[in-house]
Amino acid sequence: MTDGFIRLPEPVGDAACWLGRVCPECGALDESREPASVCARCGAELPEADG
Image (cartoon, rainbow, N blue to C red; front, side):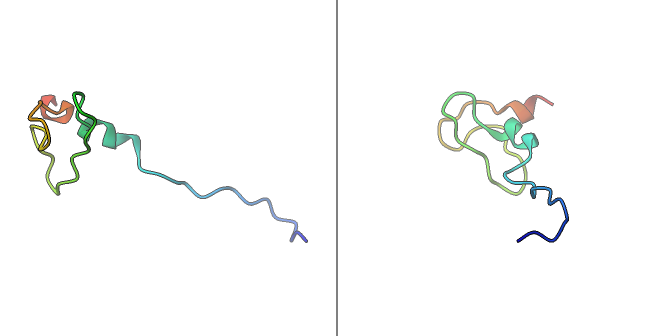
């Protein structure tokens, strides 16, 4: 049964702004409070550090 309203889906997932926190070498996500300049897993420079 419907109530006559069109329901829009709720936004899901994380914003694209997280892409700068993904390591280009190993794919690890930097989840620290302040963006890191190097990956904690492999030591590669993170893209957000370039900005």
